[in-house]
Image (cartoon, rainbow, N blue to C red; front, side):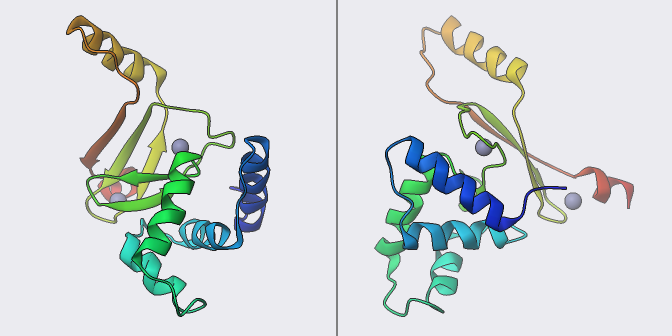
Length: 148
Ligand SMILES: [Zn+2]
Ligand SMILES: [Zn+2]
């Protein structure tokens, strides 16, 4: 069973503190929305939900909070969907990550396969390119949709 939203918020707070950063009330609230959602949320969906408790919230409010969460790798942005999902790694230390995005039910699985990351890095270096970060998004059909 995966840890509860509350447990993950506690972890996130400790993670920020260890990095000398602060998970402010607003950042915590945005992270809470992303953790509680069962599908990736766009910045505008987050803004709509945030306005339920903070009427004065405007787009920069949400973008600043998201920047912080991305920077500390508490969430990931899926470029393809332009939406945000929580990072599943407890220590958020990874750089290279792959996402499996189901086109049918919309679920997104985060995986971290070091062989894939290494292969991409090797290919890049062969072209004289120094990679900093590799995020791969795969479109397809998840196991349960394929079975059903
Ligand atoms: Zn992650
Ligand atoms: Zn599916």
